[in-house]
Image 1 (cartoon, rainbow, N blue to C red):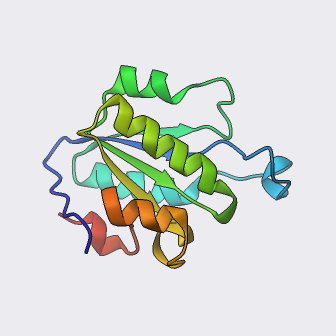
Image 2: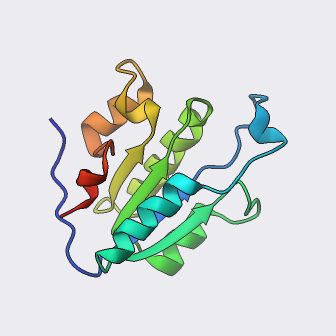
Length: 139
């Protein structure tokens, strides 16, 4: 059902936590912690000798996706997703593919894996692989 991704040694992976959706007021507008999920994914990928960079747009308010794509030139873009992030995740995925159609986009989180009617789920069915378990990282 999902496209298979073969990750070779030393693949460049950009992991992204999207910026806060200002249209929706949640606790993230006032208080948030480290992106522990992405940090765990990063650790697993680094153990497998991939080059990983984390872009935390909740903290780096003035950073741009384009800057990260140009400077790092990733082969894979991984995006974490919460319910309020749908709009931003779709924008990041679309912009990544427009920058380089060969970039593989991976979306993780409940929107990508559990909610069948989610726009992110539809995106992952077409162009990415949802991440549900540690075994998906072992190639």
